[in-house]
Amino acid sequence: MRSCATAIFVALLLCGIVQAQNAPQQQPSPSAFDAQTASPMLLQLSEALQGHSQKQFLGLFDLDKMKDGPLFKQQINSFFGQTESIRAHLNLMDTSVDGDKANIMVEAEMEATPSNGGAPGRRNERLAFTVVRVGDKWKFVEVQPRSFFSLP
Image 1 (cartoon, rainbow, N blue to C red):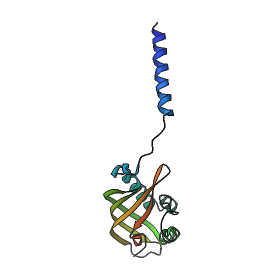
Image 2 (image 1 turned 60 degrees about the horizontal axis):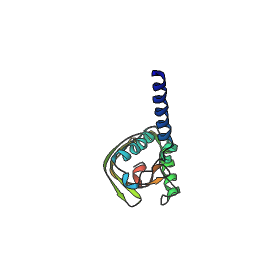
Image 3 (image 1 turned 180 degrees about the vertical axis):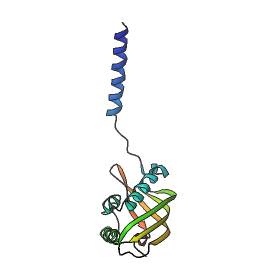
Image 4 (image 1 turned 45 degrees about the vertical axis):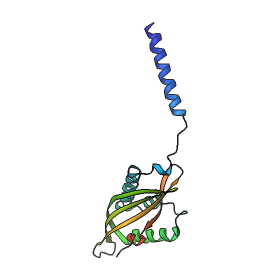
């Protein structure tokens, strides 16, 4: 009798797990964008800069939806090509939602060492990012000022 009760319990438990796995996943709405969503994006951006990975950095952007996306890609490729190392700190200041877009305000500090051996260039600026939902991810579609990602 006890093993029968255990078997029923296990069957009900498995049934609940299967139902949970098959339940439709709801997509977060743009209004669900907040600091908890923005922080990992900024961490990935910072890690891509410090890891000197232009592929990872550009992968965080939707260049097709970005105004002058190909020009921005060219700028980033040039920036990474001209730098030997990059240190970056991105401090989230604010997030807001505007229709189907979200905005992120960041205090940004960066030190970039040129590959030609010159003195490191330092930047301290407030950056404004715009993000949109692309499939199941948020992607950057704008950053201002773009000149932040260039050697001084």
